[in-house]
Image (cartoon, rainbow, N blue to C red; front, side, top):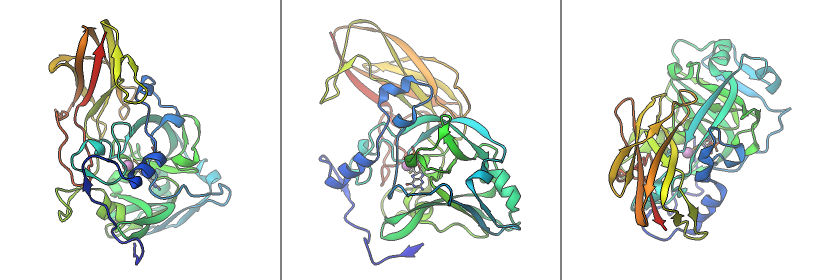
Length: 363
Ligand SMILES: Nc1nc2c(c(=O)[nH]1)N[C@H]1C(S)=C(S)[C@@H](COP(=O)(O)O)O[C@H]1N2
Ligand SMILES: [Mo]
C-alpha cells in the first residue's frame, strides 16, 4: 500500500437529493441487473451487475501468470493452461455488492449510488483455490492470504491494486474457486478475464477479479480495501467492523408494465402472480419470504434454491383490486435473521438489506 500525494481523500461527503456528476459517472460504468431478469435462475453474463473500481485491465492471456509467493514452500507462477489442468468445480453463486441499496440510505454517502440492482447469480467454474495453495505449501505461521488484481488506482488518497484477503481456513474451503468461466464461457473482460476468485456467501468485494498475485502472509494484509474501504462504520472516525457475509435479502420483479421515465407500474386487476428472489450469506438457506400488500403480510411460496450459495425463487398470487397499492417483500433466513423495514444506518451506505418496496397502480 503506497500513500500518495495525488487524489487525497477528496470531496466525498453525505448528501440528500440530487446526484452529483461523479455519482452519475460511476453509475454509467457500473451497471446493475434489470430486475425482470431475476426471472432466470442464472443471470446472463451481459445482465449480471458490474462493480469496477479502477479501469478494466488489458490482459494478454498468453502472457498472464498467477504468482503465488510469500510464506510458502514452493512459490508458483502458473500459466492459464496450467491452471486449467487442475480439478474443476462449477457452482451457481449469488453475488451482491456490499454497497447495494446505498442510494436508499439517507443522507447518502457519495459513492456508486446503487438502488437495488447490484446482484446476480451465475454459474462459476474453476479450480478450488485449495489445490493451488496445497501445491504451494502454505507455511505454518500463515495468518492471511492476500489476493491482488491487475487493476490499479487511487481511493481515499491511497494508490493500490484492488485486493482482498482471507484467513487460511476461509481460503481452503472447497467452495472458494479460482474461476476461468462464467455460465460456461470464458470470463468477459469486465468480469475478471482471464481468472478471478469467487468467494461464495461473501459480499462481492472478496471475489477479486483479474487475479495475478496470491501472497501468503504471516501478518494481516494491509490492503486499502480490506483495512479501510469495506468496514461498517457509524461515522468516519469509527474504526469499524469488517464486512464479510451477505445479509439476508429479497427482491420482487416489479409486476405489470412500467412508465418509461418514472418506472411507475400499472397492473391489471384480478389475480397477479408476484415473484422474486431471496438469498442470504455464508450458505445460510432462506426459511421464509413474506409479501405485504398495503402492510398486510402474507407468506409466499418458497422454492428450494438451485444450490447452497444461489438465490431461491418465491411466488405469491395477489388478488389485485383497483387503486393505489404498496407491495413489499421480506425474507428470513435459517439463522432467524430478517430484513428490516427501513435501512439501517451505515456511514458508507453498506449492507442495506431493508425490505423492497414497490408501489403500483391497479386499473
Ligand atoms: N480486481 C478487482 N476485483 C473486484 C473489484 C474490482 O474493482 N477490482 N470489485 C469487487 C466488487 S466491490 C464486487 S461487488 C465484485 C463485482 O463482481 P462483478 O463485476 O463480476 O459482478 O467484484 C469485486 N472484485
Ligand atoms: Mo461491491
